[in-house]
Length: 377
Image (tube, rainbow, N blue to C red):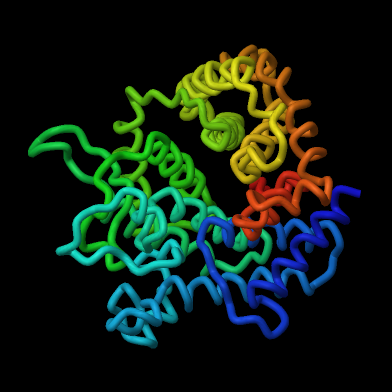
């Protein structure tokens, strides 16, 4: 039943956002990263080649839409500045736009914090989501160019977003950069960006197909991000952030299991902060509110992360220092089912809070209903 609803949601998303059918393409990087994984999950579950075709077409659309300048921008072509032919070969070399409704802020304009949420640019944590989608494409298809595109995106994102707080000082990751990556638009630091980047680059680094410069570049990036994470504090009261922490822990568990002990200490730290974050849910009346007062995609992000704990149990043996922490967190797993049941009710998806963010809500509900689609294999 869950897969049936997930399939319905994803077929609807494909038609309404221009992957299939005649609608004009409507691309947004975060949503599309989850959607690629969902289509791969449906392909694996059903064996229907149509879903693999959707995933391929979506990757191509994202690169040709968000890897190029906007229609309302006087600039044209690939945002990397590459020629058309080179851009086709290296579509992620300039990063990828977020896909926001408004164009980015002009350098002479003052910052309007409210309006900035609706303005385009690039987010580091959206780029890491797309790296993961490309990584999953490479795993499912066995085609090496997807992995190369993911690594090229990792290299350019690290170079563009990392900054020193002051000359010779600690390095950090800028929250938001301009479309062409030439200037920061929001100079603050995302709480989990370094952790997200580190785990993604560790996964790419251990990919068997990588050799030569690709492997060396990732080794350098991993070392830099590891240093940024040494004193990281990741406790959060945001359900979406909690889900991200749990997803990070799940992926680190796989790394620790395969390549121990390189990820053990970081995983232990992540589980402690995830546990402290989840404890706050007992004090927050989030899930007793009516649908009109809830943001579905934030709750569904938590549900997706909770599903990752189910896979962690498979590798959480007594040989691992973090196993006890994992078992304690597993007490929260039933909350994922509670969130899914609430948002599976059609009436709850008719509210303005759902419809205002319909694409991302539909896609993340589908992900939560079949969470194995986002898992590395």
